[in-house]
Image (tube, rainbow, N blue to C red; front, side):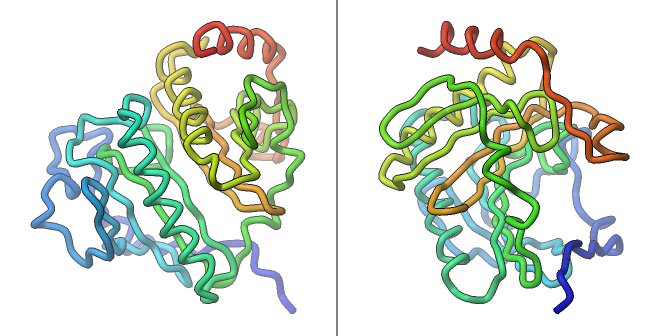
Length: 253
């Protein structure tokens, strides 16, 4: 059996996508509910829609709109909103994982001009992959790191064996009932990246994983990608990880 290792991107659809991260004067497609098409579910401010620009072949692409305003951002969500987001996102992520149609399902979030996204308005994506299992390219070793905090079944670390390189924050949860703790730790990582990171940073990604009975999140500050990773898949590890961990402990714990 041939193993599928790549997704196929359709540029004829991609070129039609709106862009409001760089062009802040552009009309936002997520600000007006009346303009949304194919709404799949909604709870309060959260709206799940079928992606209007499905650029990836053999996938089912959805967008989770997280706020009613373009100016809200994950790091400043009030706790009630933050926890509601995790509940709503996990509900639909698990539904897609459990319906038997997909080999694996992605849950991810892009924010900022270097994140790979195109829309400024805070949102996430849930994408069903019919032919590809993302877990074949991910190992639990990539979530090993220096412990920042631990509460209940959730551990918060800074990677010592990062997947892409430099700084990757990990939140690892064994019991789904502790998802509020996971939400708190994830928000702390994003807040640190945007407000206290050693190098000015305005972009990040959240990547969610389900592996070996655990739910895991990687929070990655985004800069121009290292050529060593682009050309050779060589991930670099920063030498000041301990300093970052100590600063986070002082700021948040």
